[in-house]
Image 1 (cartoon, helix red, strand yellow):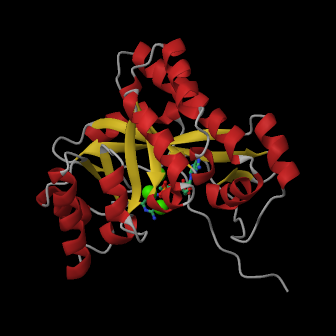
Image 2 (image 1 turned 180 degrees about the vertical axis):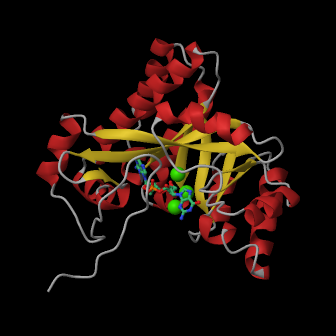
Length: 277
Ligand code: C2E
Ligand code: CA
Ligand code: CA
Ligand code: CA
C-alpha cells in the first residue's frame, strides 16, 4: 500500500531519484548529517531585468544524502525548525555562503549572497555580532550579505526579532522581505523594519501574465517598494512572458527557472557565459 510518489524538482546538474514528498528524517539523523557536513549550498542567480547581469544569488540548502542523493529543504527544514537544529545548521550555511563570497571577491566579483533565516534564529540577539565578526575576519563588505526573512517568521517573537534586525541593519547588512504578500501583516512589517529588498512571492509572479488581479498585485508591490526606496525581486520567473511583463512593470531583479535553477557554485560561471550570449 505504497502511497503516491511525488517528484522533487530536478536540480541543475544532478539527476535525482524520486523522493516521496512525505519523507522525513528524525532529529538524530539530521544532527549527524550537520556534523558530517552533508549540507551544502546551491546558488540561484538574481539578475537585473534591464541588462540581464547577475548581481546577486540566493543560497539554498541541499542535503547530499549518502544513499538518497540530493534532498531539498522541504524534507528537512521543518524538522530542524521544530527541534532547534536550525541554529547550528544556519551558522554552517552562513559560513559556506561567506566563504563563497570571499572567493568571488578574490576573483574580482562583487556578488551579494542572500541567506534564508528562520524565525527561531531571529530571537538569537548574538547573531548580528557573530556575523559582523565573520565578515570582518574574511574582509567582506557587510552589504554583500543579504538576510532573507519571511514576514510570517517575524510574527513569532516580534520584539527580539526586531532588535536583531535593527542590529543587522545598523552594521550594514541588507535585509530582504521574502514571500511578500503571503502573510497577513506585510504592511506592518514594512513599517517597522528597514528592508532594502522586497521579494514578490512566486504565487503572484507566475499568474501575473494570465490573471488581472495577480498582475495588479505585482504592480502595486513594485510601486510600494520603490516608494520606500526598496529594490524588487520577482521570484519564480519561469517564462519569457513573465520576464517581459516584469520588465514592463519596472521590476528590478528576476529569479527563477527561466533564468537558472539553483546550482552548485562551480556551475555558475558556465551558466553565466551561456546566459549572457
Ligand atoms: P524560498 O526562500 O522562497 O526559496 C525559493 C524556492 O523556490 C527555492 O526552493 C527555489 O529552488 C524555488 N524556485 C526558484 N525559482 C523557481 C521557479 O522558477 N519555479 C519554481 N516552481 N520554484 C522556483 P527550495 O530550494 O526547495 O527551498 C524551499 C524553501 O526552503 C526556501 O523557500 C526557504 O524558505 C527554505 N530554505 C532553503 N534553504 C534554506 C536555509 O539554508 N535555511 C533556511 N532557514 N531555510 C531554507
Ligand atoms: Ca528566500
Ligand atoms: Ca521566497
Ligand atoms: Ca517561498
